[in-house]
Amino acid sequence: MPRPHGFSYEQHTGGTVRITHHGRPATTLNGPRAARFLAEVETSDPQLVMARWTGNYKRGNERTARDHPRNRG
Image 1 (cartoon, one colour):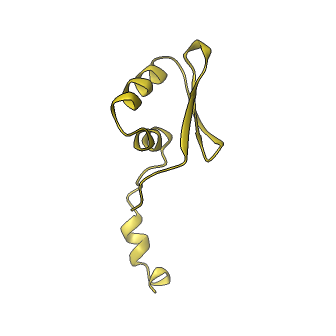
Image 2: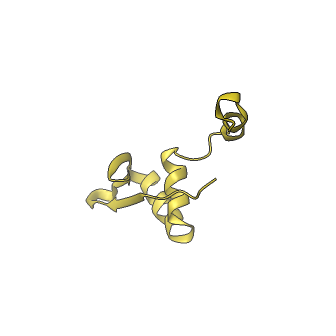
C-alpha cells in the first residue's frame, strides 16, 4: 500500500488546527485534541499522523477488494 501523501495542516490562533488533503478541508481540531495532534505530528511521520487523524487510513478491506473477481486482472 502506498504511503499517504498530500496532507498539510495549518495552526490558527486560539489553538485550532485545520488539516487539508490536496487542498480540500479534511478535518478541524480544537482544544485538547489539537494539542495532542501537534505533539504527535512533531514526533512521528506527519503524513501518517494526518492520515490517521482524518480517518483516511487503512480501513481493513484492502485485501478483500484486491481479491474480488471484478478487480483481478
